[in-house]
Amino acid sequence: MRFPLFSRMPITYTWSRHGLPMSPRASFSDHNRVMMIDDVQIEDGGTYICHASRYTTARTQKNVTLVIECK
Image: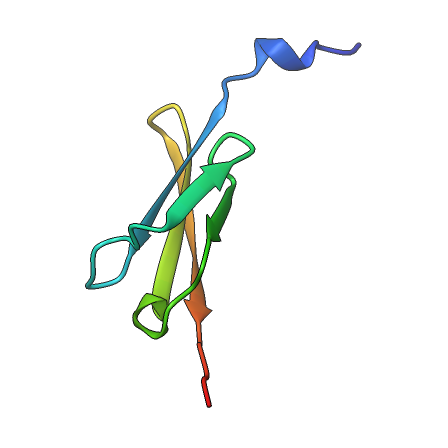
């Protein structure tokens, strides 16, 4: 038996930055699953955290470290 996808509870995605505020150039797409930083600057480097949750019971998070090198 198949259940329609719309019957499942949606996953909510949010982003944060470890120890610092989010970059003012950060934007999000695809239901907050994708974070983009336009015109990235050296100060945008650091660890960003994607939080995923389904309702109030299932939660997980993944860290992404952005390293920016310049000449």
